[in-house]
Image (cartoon, rainbow, N blue to C red; front, side):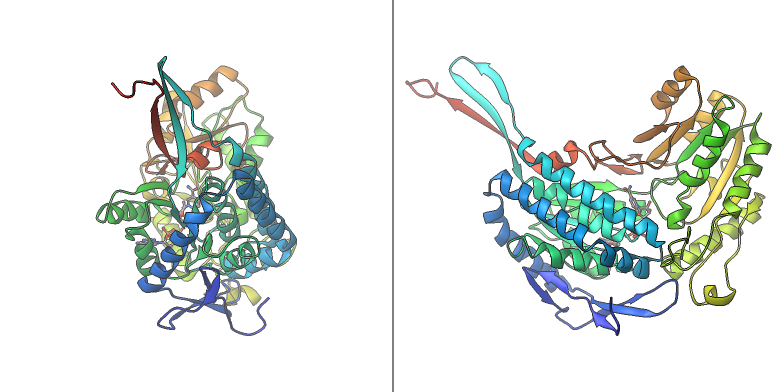
Length: 489
Ligand code: NAD
């Protein structure tokens, strides 16, 4: 842990370094307001150095046997596991989420890396029947250099697990963490150097508009994978297209519905409504079911039960083991949350839990807001339509299946959705009709490696956490072989 203000360096081509112009960004602990560390603010020249190093490394790395890629990923997974306590604590300090959730993020990152390692020898082409004297087959080959631009909400999880799929397909990777939470990504890159040749994994820290944009517009990067807001995602697609044609995949925001039918296990549904909102990350998780849509017959009691469970969530110092919800990541996110609480009041929604900042005692030093629930929300209001990415749950009633689906599908997003019912047919109808990329039936929040995660509509392009993600870091080449002795006809 940093005891005084330390510089967490970028890792470029196996070397640790500062920005070429010496500029830095502050890493602030959102729970205390303290300056934790500094990170370099990369310039376009620094990004260019990282790309050059990654390109150089790619020429060797792509020719390695898949067993080499597998063993490297397994070794990185072991290093993340061995250093898990330090990495989790770094995220707690840098990001404000509670320690027990950050330990879970470490566990999931290790699990994902081991899963990707298991796939390196399955990235296969196929043979295509053409004629008796010809062989036609496809190869899946790496792009070369992959840029992975990641957000603030699961810093270690994204930095560690998202190098897995590109490396498993033989690419080299440049990670660009959020300027708000870069520390654990730097550590991941430092650990990766212990097992990888220089340049196979680099980490550039810095601002989205400079370091991020320099990656997106670099002509030697043909594959970009972005996780973040829908607004930035659209900007990245447009900027990339100004330079050349790049394959861009996007994991973006959500305004995800959880629909509760009256025949469901009501206690399980109440627990899921609270868990699905991910108050444990202060609502800062893309898959959060931030719209709770409840059948009118059970609405009043259900809403009361959710409110009392949310009221019982323990706010506290993110480093305490019994803290259940921590600090908002930074001032601008805090401003957005408080602005939306104001909007909800103005739109006539009924506040039933939370709704205020915590300012007493130690809370006064940081960015804490109580988990908040508004009931009787108008499905067309801003509270119901816009992603807040904070601890604010919007609850609304529905009358029948079509009404519920109309509300559920009325937003621009389509990332996750959840339904609670004991009617098998209704559950499958919901799964068929909902416009979302990931659907839970009688469950919520859970991610499992090997199951494709990603969004419909403005929630994204492409899928992650499964074999198709690894394949998405390859390009298909078709090879047509004429093996007749008289030669081509
Ligand atoms: P953001 O879009 O502000 O930033 C994400 C990353 O993009 C950061 O590293 C940032 O520096 C970089 N960036 C910003 N502007 C850029 C530009 N012009 N060019 C290149 N890079 C740029 O998002 P955030 O606030 O860090 O994260 C919250 C958002 O991420 C939410 O919308 C959330 O739903 C989404 N998210 C989605 C998923 C998913 O899997 N679908 C997962 C986590 C978070």
